[in-house]
Structures are given as C-alpha cells and as structure tokens.
Length: 111
Image (cartoon, rainbow, N blue to C red; front, side, top):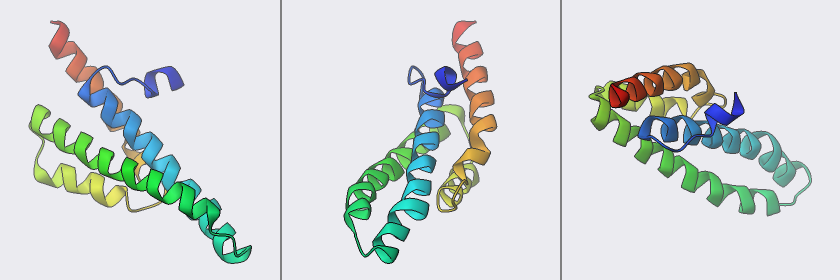
C-alpha cells in the first residue's frame, strides 16, 4: 500500500504522493508543532515544520494544476483540492480518487 502511495512516476501518482505528504505535514504542524510552541513556549518545531509545509503546499497546488490540465478536470476540482488542503486530514479524503485517477491515466498510457 505505502509503496503505491509514494510513487512519483506519473503526474497523477505525484499528485497522490504530494497530497499525502502535505496532509501529514499539516497534521504535524497543527497537532504537534503549534501546541509545542504555545504550551511549552518553544517555537523551534514551527520554525522547522512551517517552511517544509509551505513548500509542500505549493508543490500540491502545482501538482493539482498539472493534473487538472492533463486530465481535463474543471477548475472546481482544483479548488476542492485547495480547500481540502486547508482542513486537517482533508487531503487524505481525496486519496482514493487520486488512486483511481492514476489507474485510469496508466491504462490510457499503456494501451
């Protein structure tokens, strides 16, 4: 399962992998780093995870925009992913749809 999740060999697989890692970074930021910052008065975790999450957020937007164009998805599809990325665990709800999209893309490329 994890092997399939962390594939980067197609645009649709990259979107799935980046969405998972971005969602994980958001959870760590919100539920680990921010409480450490405010409860223990130590901002080091936010300083470390914040920029990483920011880069992953931008990468997710790029990957979603790439797949949107490649697969002919409507702008509303792209915006729904953007909204999901603002909600903890939001990108995880898209995982099955991303897996299906990747399977369809691979079938089209192979035959």
